[in-house]
Amino acid sequence: MDTRIVEVEAFSVRGFDRIGPLTMIPELWENFNSALAENEIHADESFGVCLRAEKDEFHYIAGINSTILAGLANSIEVTIPKGKFIVGLVEDGVHEISASFETLMQRKDIQFRPSYALERYVHPKGSTGFEIEVWLPIE
Image (cartoon, rainbow, N blue to C red):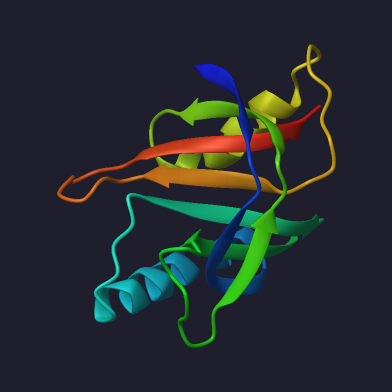
């Protein structure tokens, strides 16, 4: 897996959230993407933010940068604190996201810090596909 270290300033993500098993995430994205299309909103990137993970229950947000999405009914906002992240490129599609997170979490050469884990989907306007990255906060 290709990785890199990035340092970001704090930014906010606004979108739809749900609490439940990982299996609820695809439907959440469907609902969020439909709402964006209905409101003619396009972003070159979107984020899946894991607010909490306990056993088989996740609190997850499907969203975009809040500067693009100032308001949308039933949406919530979370701020990603500034700091460093190790970023891994997910190969072979969304079904490999969990395995990509696991691979990064096994690294012994980095120290993780408390913050949100996230996915970044890069999909420039006019593109037919997207690139997926997993981000884990590090010291």
